[in-house]
Image 1 (cartoon, rainbow, N blue to C red):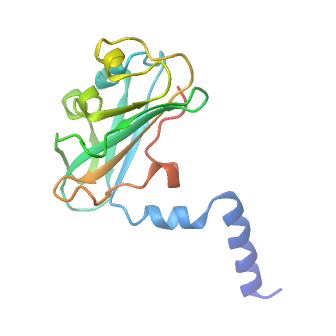
Image 2 (tube, helix red, strand yellow):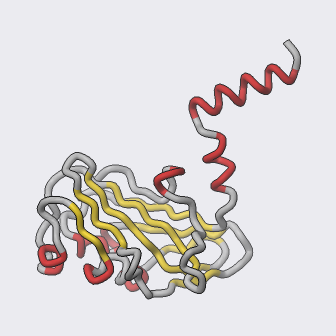
Length: 173
């Protein structure tokens, strides 16, 4: 078996288990969003703004540049069809400065991201009114995904698309 055949078979097997395009495309983005949500899991949308105690979000800047970013997000419960997401026609305006290296976000960095005025609500049991009055989220497993965009050019993504690359999401909570 020649070297070309071995490499081809290796790449084919790798594509089955880990899509090569996903790995290569992540390198196109200078930022990576990492989310950790320890137990007990949040039960109210307002719990997500209490970053220091209930949720840990780090933005890793792999470049040598400093960025001004805005964040978009999605909290989703697939089983119940619930999606709470950033409103694309009214995105958050709170700019966050991201320096090279690891940047732990603080509560004030996320105030707009989880503000009901900047969110769309889909699914039974969630609405701007219920979230504003701080009612509990409907029971079930949720995933939280966050993506960073350039504050000066909001159409320019600086971190990978969570749907395409499984990056920037928490595990089920």
